[in-house]
Each structure stands twice: as structure tokens, then as C-alpha cells.
Image (cartoon, rainbow over all chains, first blue to last red; front, side, top):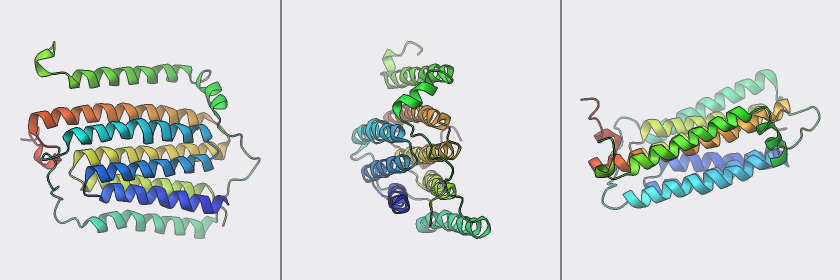
Length: 170
Length: 101
């Protein structure tokens, strides 16, 4: 069961990522990226991390991608002309090379060591309560600091978004 | 065949490389930003996989940190992009080389 789900979600995530990179239009890329992120939430669920799966959908597929789509909407129109790709780099080759490298590495690894399955006692699932327990005890300082990072990001985005004549530092 | 750590690592590595290829070959800075998000997502999968192997939820905490960093990166990156677009009417990185000249 896990095997089937892993290959399903893995293929969906990778396929979505490849289509994101390969699509010509930014809107199509963004939609494929949402698809890839939702599939990645399935991978998190397989890894006994239900809370992360929810967060992945809420934050990535929800908030971040809405932000991207808004910006694309603002920039779209005559201002995104057909993209000039760099010459001498056939796109498919560039995408296929990493995939081939990964396949070689994986096959070599499997041949040498065999598969290390997740064994031992089943781990506790990373539910919201369990993660919060860690987050608000051992990692409290990191948690507070990351909120400072977010605050600075908000201020930075606001400062960048102001009209030029309104900027106090001009 | 049982699914083990190596499978998740291979998936994450492939995702990361796809994102890296995107940053390298695409000239549209919006899509380059999206490729960076793909790379961050690959990192998150590695964190979650090792968290499962060790039975330690610390990895999940760091994935949440990574979410916050990704959100900040997207917000700032897109704000810079909008500003560049307002000044230069383009988001193609090949045309943005004022710093280089």
C-alpha cells in the first residue's frame, strides 16, 4: 500500500515540478506548482507527518501560490513577451540529465546495499500537539526568531511596495 | 519492494535537481522563483524522511521553519520583482544587467 502511494505521489510531485519548469507561460507554471505541492503533501502524510501535510497545503499551495498568481496577474499582458531561452541548452536534455543521474545513483545504491526499509517500532505521528510540544519547549527561541524573520519580510515587502515619492529615505 | 529512506532521498534529490535546472535554464524570473520553491520543498522532504527514520519530531519543527523562510523569500522576491518590473518593464533576467555593466 505504502509502495503504491509513494510511487503515485512521487510521480505526481516530480511530474508537476517538471511541468512547472517546462511550461512556457508563468500562469501554467503556477498551476502545475500547486499540483506538485499538493502531491508533496501526500508524501508528508506517508512520512507520518499529518500536520506538515496540512501546513504544506495551507501555506504552500494556498498562501504562497496565491501570492504568485496575484503577481503574475499584475505583470501579465503585454509585458511578458515570449521568453527568449538561452541558446545551446536544449531544454529536454537539461531536464533529462539530472533524472538520469539520479536513476544511476539509486540503482547503484540499491545494488550495493539493498533497501533500508523503515524498521523498528512504528514512530509516533507528527500531529499538531506533538510538534507544538517541541516547538514551544525545546525550540522556543528558534520559533520566536522565525517570527522576527517574518516580521522583517513584511516590513521589507511593504517598503519595496511603496510609491517612490512616499519613501522617507529618498 | 519496501519503501525505505533511500526512496525518499532519491525523490528529494530529483526534485531539487529539477528546481535547479529551472533556475538555470529559465529566463523568466517568476518561474525562477517558483523553481526555488521546488528546491525548498525537496529539502523539506529530506527533513521529514530523516525525522521518520530517527523517530524524532525535531525535523518537523525545522520543516515549519522552512515554511516560514519560504514564505518570506516569496514575499520579498515578488516585491523586488514588481519593483523591477515597474522600473524596467521586464522580468526577463537576461535584460537585467545594469549591475554588471
